[in-house]
Image (cartoon, rainbow, N blue to C red; front, side, top):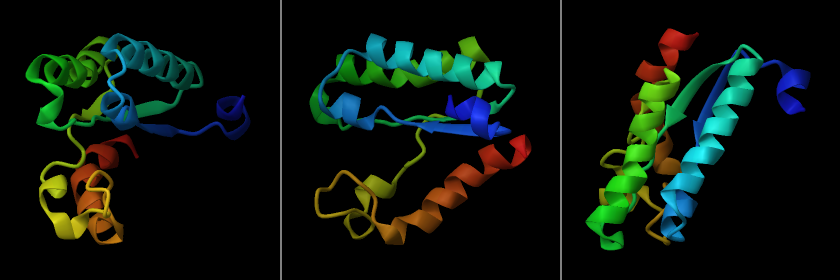
Amino acid sequence: DLLATHQPQIVILELGGNDGLRGFAPSNLQKNLEQMIALAQAEEARVLLLGVVIPANYGEVYRARFTAVFSDLQKEEGVAALLDFLGPIPLQPELMLDDGIHPNAAAQGQIVERVWPHLQPLL
């Protein structure tokens, strides 16, 4: 078990974007994240959850259910969270890879600026 081996003080969980883009059930994403949070907390690591917002073309119902996973987990599990860690970055083509989905190297500084205020209190 990597958590037991490395004993991190902080675990940053950022995933789900590919689940959303593939149309996977938000309930599965929630179960997976709940398990990861529980495992991290069992090793006494503090968790920072980084949420993802999927594009509007997936429909508002699915998009709302998907986005709610992160806010629900923040409340239910009492973890620190940034519910939309990319914020306006995907709206700036110069900060995105050619696939239009993933941020490029130029976006990394802005991602750090967005995440740092949520990570710093855990340090």
